[in-house]
Length: 353
Ligand code: PEP
Ligand code: MN
Picture 1 (cartoon, helix red, strand yellow):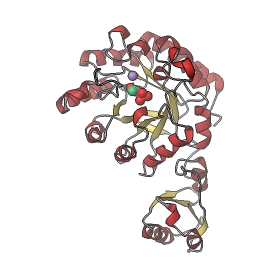
Picture 2: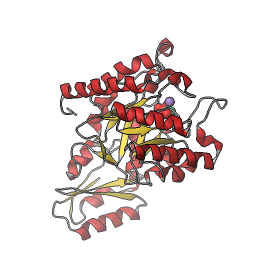
Picture 3: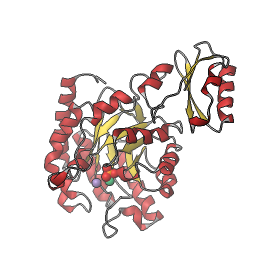
Picture 4: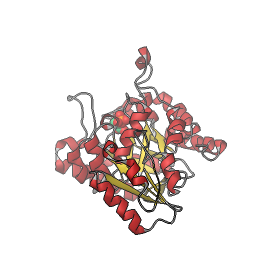
């Protein structure tokens, strides 16, 4: 990264950007309150850092060895640009602000009536964001893949229901995209685009979604270490989209752990990640547990660990659900989760990380 003098001129900054481009790299220009910091995006081994250090207006040219830097606290601090935390705005909702945000809704959108009923229920329970899957990532080709699998018309219809439900109950909406071909379509309807755990590593998808400029709910893969998760998040910030909400949703359980929970919720990832990056992180207790009787406690634990919010699967009649019925809670149960988590949040006070 190139750290400019606090009195560097626009011409000097432009000259550095031009110079970076000469080496086939891109420049992430972060104009902060005190100074401008320019992050190099691309293969840095091609760049003679010593040469940059002596160009006019440059305070320091520093090689950063970590695989992620644009999302790092260190980078943000240098420019003084980011406040301590990134607050991601979706409609009137702030994710990463002073209050925890609750996102809730069915695993999959099944019908308009189902979605509207659940949307009303989660709103009454105190949820802020409505979720609903239309393109479902499934382990078996023989299971329900979401209404989006029926073709573009079916996908559009379901997206319209989601939009309508969100508008009617005044909640921004989030749905997952599973492949590059769905990005343009989905981006027209939703406030937040979800990238699921199984797609965490898909660089081309990350880039394409990031370019839409909308907030992204980005899930950690169940086999990914924290460094990998953050390194791949960097792909989106490299496209100049800093509205990334990270989501911990459980990692592969050890031994016979799978007999007890679907995944293992990595609670310690929350404060550990908050030390590294200014991006907000939320918890998905539903996919981690895979069973509804654990969702309450895991939700409490997530908020106690400092998560900025929760993503919870809710259905008015879980036994009827086509997908993930075993882990969905009812709107009444959600209300209890939200009330209790708000009290926990009060008790632990402002974020320590
Ligand atoms: C989901 O949120 O619907 C989902 C499939 O989650 P994950 O990608 O975490 O498995
Ligand atoms: Mn699900």
